[in-house]
Amino acid sequence: MPDNHYENPKLTSVYDLDSGWSADRDFYLSLAGSAPLSILDIGCGTGLLCNQYAASNHEVTGVDPSGAMLDVGRQKPYGKKIDWVQSFAQDLNLKKTFDLIIMTGHAFQVLIQDDDILATFRSMRKHLKPDGIIVFESRNPVIDWTINWNYDMEFNLPDGGIVKESRRFISMEENKMSFDLRYQFQDELLTSESLLRFWTRQEIEDHAAATGLSVEKILGNWDGAAFDKNTSEEMIFFLRKRNT
Image (cartoon, rainbow, N blue to C red; front, side, top):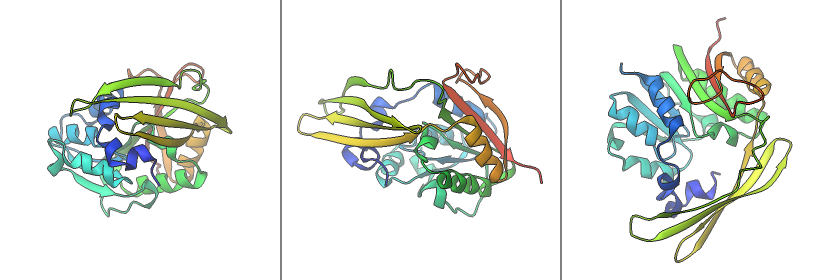
């Protein structure tokens, strides 16, 4: 099941306040260009990117396992132009193909088991046009992410209230990080515990190859810099169908 901060309507209603537009979304938006494309956003969340793609006249399908997140997406300015689908990536079966398939916001890292990645890659490949491309990112596991993982912040709510949010690292075992998020509203405290896996570049490439996909390139940052295994924080993968 999705984590509580993806499922609880009170938390999804404020999701965009602390996860708003950012450099990574600029990067993914630029991939589409100006000519209309068919775009599949897997793990679309509240649909920030979907909305901007639709504003540029792309044909957009947003997929997420959380109905509460999709409900927020439907209220976006271009929400009615977007095909919203509630599904896990592993089970997706839309019976159509796309020019561009993306998975953003480090959603790839919620795929914990090898079978999760294999099923997701098979699903992506099935939905990809022959000349289409898949783009997603995962954090470079060489970086020590535990050092600066914790944070505290607060933001104003649309109704005039304030919510205090904190993130706390719990443990890192076998490249799997557990942490929790706490949201202190004026009337209650809501918590959400999460688990992420920090896959290696080789693991991702091997799983892609096993499902008929090939790595075209890997970038290391949102400015388009090449991936450096020792210093890059991001591993931004571009995959295509492998020629057979």
